[in-house]
Image (tube, rainbow, N blue to C red):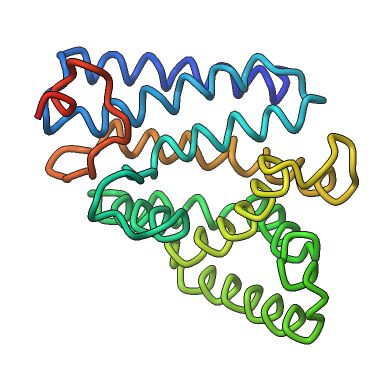
Length: 235
């Protein structure tokens, strides 16, 4: 029986093959945003698939970059005034507007293992800034409301709200690791890394499949930092 790592590696290979088949033509101004997003994301997933299961911080970082490649918007654009949470929410909303987007994402958040791992992150005190700021009353209120919001979104099959609740906790974990606010083996990040990695390895292929299979008729925001001499760069 293949290991989880082998299965993930095979999934990434399948995603890459599907992507290359469906986007074999050279990118145009309209297709470059989705082509570059998916291509960049898969390149980071390939790196993740080759890392040891014990290399959790590097795996999480590569998975985060793969996610950011899908939802990020040009931060240097004059009209850009949002942030990661807003960009991610807009991205998931766009996915739900695809032909089978709502049903596929509802199926994703309905999986028992997804819910178990997501609850583990949402309940982690280490992933709430209020706990670190010693605002205990505020932490208890916000964490309680956050979990209630998450549970309600599951009951309503509301993928946008559900995934946004999860993203907020993943964002805190990202900040702890990327900004040097955690040592490599400290418990506060180690305990959160495992479920975070499992969730991202589950979520990212679903996002990419939707984008590759059902992107037609959907406008995607310009890709950040387009390659030189590409259609978007030349505009």
